[in-house]
Length: 111
Image (cartoon, rainbow, N blue to C red; front, side):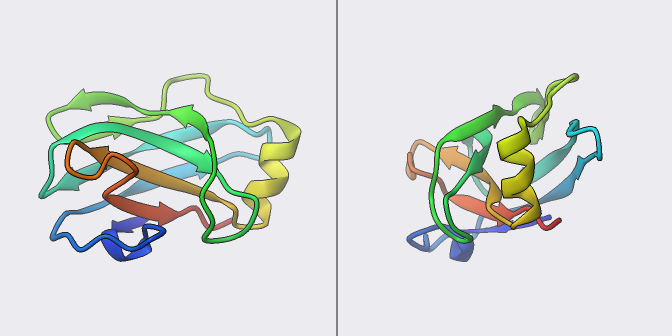
């Protein structure tokens, strides 16, 4: 997954970026982490939107596990409805900062 400000809704002008691997298993388990650069993150989450490239609520909070690394907690799982949303491309990772409380960089999870 690649995270950029251009993928935010609405888009954010920033030089910050992120990348990582997020895996969703057939058993609905979620694992992985992202590494960010160019910003001081305050939070990072997986969100579920009603439509692709929409905005929606947090479904999996990520934990800061190193200076610029945010990881999905062990044992994280999607509900049946969230798994269906994932298969439709409605889930995304969002990284928030003090300057951009709604999110500074974002990347859609691709099934």
